[in-house]
Length: 243
Image (cartoon, rainbow, N blue to C red; front, side, top):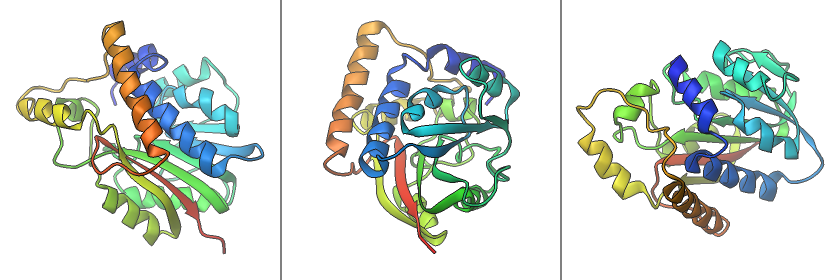
């Protein structure tokens, strides 16, 4: 992403309905499947550091990003265990972490080979460790926002699951998320096909922001019971097979 997008993300990520709702869903999955003694975690591609605050409930969080501005923002809340690096060549020893998270990173054009990044996640995870990954859904669902955030690829649930299985992971949950808004977003992005690059990461008026956050809270409740068949993102939780 360019500098403007990092500035915008840092300004809204604690309040924006999508950032807050997605964080709550991800935390729900980690709590249900990995809840236990505090663990050593890696947030691979931490951006401006929003996830570090809630990931701290699960243990000692090590955060990595390659962009200097992202690291500058992330360091404002906590300089401890913050590393400059690339998800395709993680500067950590094998079997270093019990949990690795990566939220909206693999899709980016700077990640030229997602297989390499996923192998790195597997390498630094302990046997039996957990990987939680979120990526944007459907490669055909591209719009002005994708051009603004430099999207290389969007994923199907099957594609992400297949890649995880091929690299020795046991997918426990793979689901689409942000499903209620799928149809209106689809129509909006079809309208945007010829529009110039434009980020969607803007904070809406407070009543709309609250309503959209409530929709994702409803999805969080549903995802405790089953997967969703369509959505704007794919969320996958997988366990590294024990040797």
